[in-house]
Length: 226
Image 1 (tube, rainbow, N blue to C red):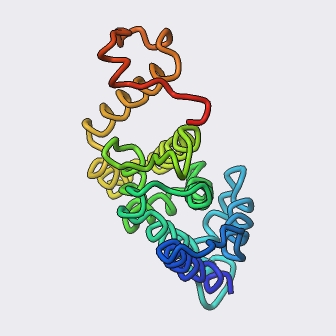
Image 2 (cartoon, rainbow, N blue to C red):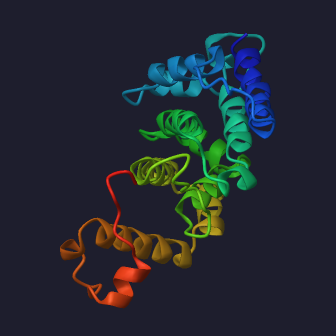
C-alpha cells in the first residue's frame, strides 16, 4: 500500500500542472502521499540504519515480496523537478514538496547508509536534480511565485543532499554520478552566485565586489518583498 500511495503523487503533480494551465484553483494541501513520505522519513531519522535499509528492501525482515520505496520517492522527485517547470519558477507549494522529497532522500542516506547511497547515486537522477538547483542558468526564482529566502532554502537542501550522497562513500558509481553532474564549473558558478546574493543583501559583507554604480545596477539590492 505504501508504494501505491507514494506513486499516487505522480497523478497529483500532473493534476496541479493541468489546473495551472487552465487557470483553475490548484490544490496545494498535503496529500496522503506526502504525509506518508514524511512519516517514513521520520523513521529513518537519527541514522537509523535498519529503517534506512528497510525503505529499500524488506527481505531482510522476512518479507516474501519487497518494495523499494526509495525508487518510488525518487520517481516522484524526478517528475516534480521537471526542467521546464523549474525554469518557470516553482510555487511555494512546489518548493515545499520538493524540499520534503529531498529531505527524504537525505535522511535515508545519512550515517552513511552505503547501500542506499549506491542505489540513489547509481540508478536515479538525484545528483542531476541537485545540480539544476545550483546552476545559475536554472531560473527557479520568480518574484510572482516565490521569494529569495525560499530559493536559498531549496538550494541549501540540494547541497545537503549532495553531501549525504558523498558522505563516507568510496563507491565508484556514487563518485561518478556526482562528478558527471557537478564539475568545477558548477561549484565555481554557485559560489559566485552566493557571493553576489550576499552583496545584494548587504554590500559591506561582500567587500570583493566594489559598490560601484555599474555593480549596483547589475546586482540590484533585494527588498523586503523579495
